[in-house]
Length: 70
Image 1 (cartoon, rainbow, N blue to C red):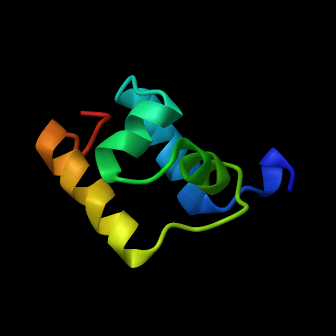
Image 2: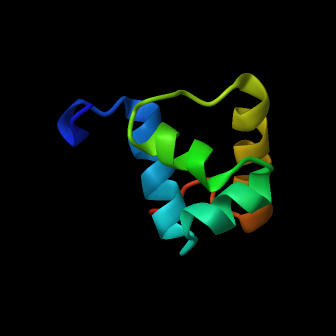
């Protein structure tokens, strides 16, 4: 799948991860998945499960990144 066709969730995860200054491996470790899973999300090959989305939400709340652009 081309980057331009990347689903919105994958793009959002990529942007959040980069804003947090984390590698795919670091981000994956913090939410309990493999780096390959994060890579697949970011490249639009898979979408995160509801459980993974809750883990991402917890991580963002812990980091205080509810609105990273503020």
